Length: 68
Image (cartoon, rainbow, N blue to C red; front, side, top):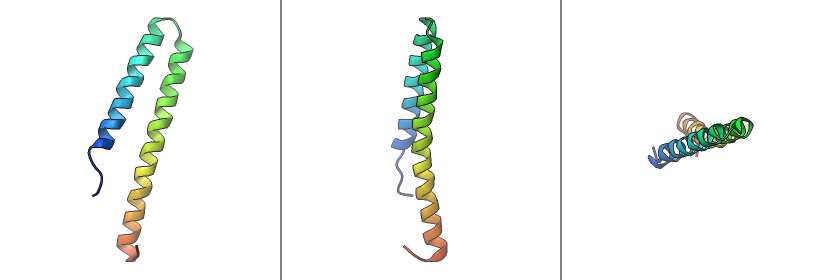
């Protein structure tokens, strides 16, 4: 597959950063903002994964239908 390991590291990096920001905001007593940061981080990762899944389905379609 043409995918690098960089995508996994990007998703893990986003997760680590979001977890750190969430912890800091929760310690400061701003739990509402902490939940929003977590939700936004989840949405960003969801869009990244969705684009990779779209590429995967296009590859599967081109293999089984013999089209490019």
